[in-house]
Image (cartoon, rainbow, N blue to C red; front, top):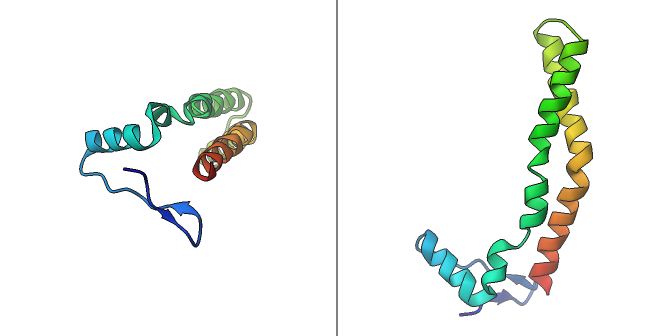
Length: 103
């Protein structure tokens, strides 16, 4: 059973799944087993984001002492650094998904 396509927007209409295993079977049948692992590479690399946040935050925390506001700002800075580093990977992942929809 192939997924239905909306001819106006040329996008796939979502299939409904009864339960998790049903979803796995339907995806395997309609898109192939490889589709179950699509985007896994960039997703695994994006696991680095929290590690970068933690490492950056701990490094900043050693250099700057202060109260709650200082630690809040250090956390915000750490998250910004991690996002700037990993954002290109998120773009690659999104483009891979879009390309898969329109191929």
